[in-house]
Length: 49
Image (cartoon, rainbow, N blue to C red; front, top):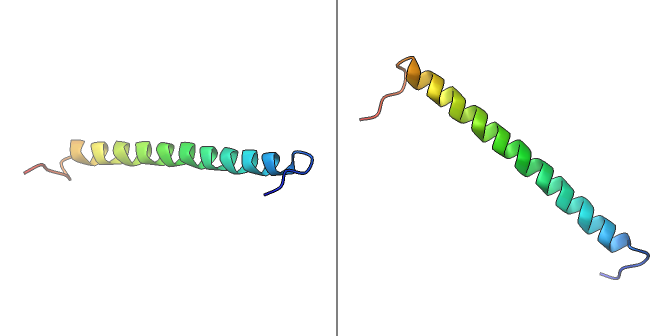
């Protein structure tokens, strides 16, 4: 890909920023899911055998 006036670098930066934002959202969702499992376990819905 040719870099004309920084356009390629700008596109790459945009992709990286979008991926980083999605990774942050993914971590937040995973943390929320862990919280729900802990809550369910605390109320007796989930058991470890």
